[in-house]
Length: 203
Image 1 (cartoon, one colour):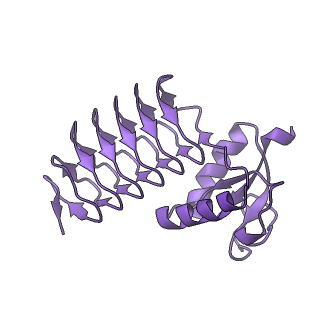
Image 2 (image 1 turned 135 degrees about the vertical axis):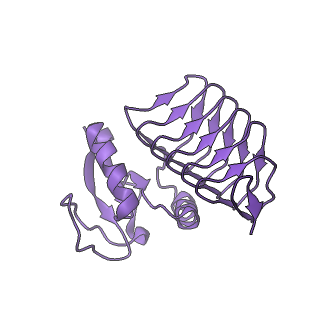
């Protein structure tokens, strides 16, 4: 059972979904790391200190919703040779056998990942999102609930595709882009942009 032990890094809203999926998959949650001990401890987890206390004996999962913070902690832990090979995938998701889900990625309930996709390290595929064929999602990006990436879409690193947004087939979205909730993206988006609306336009 030791190989099914996990510790969580971050213990607030986003982590709660991660924890419930992990428990449903038979993981034993050994505690959590965070900047400080949380009063709201619904899952009765042990507080293990800040993320700087994580050592090679721990098997952490980064349950932090913020893309930039998740990336920074991943890089810090990686530099210390902490094992980071875990992903958490809901049993009520559909993932093509020809697609690759990289480590430290959360795949939530109702997600569909169709053939020949690559999902980068440290991503969040949130509830009910659809990743169609031949898509690439860059590391530490978040595809929010209900968002749809049509075929052959590329999402850069550290980007957020908002809830119920739609990215047209063949479109490329750059690094560190925020696509607003419900937006319809019909053209390529440069890095570091914020776009909203239908069709999506920069703001």
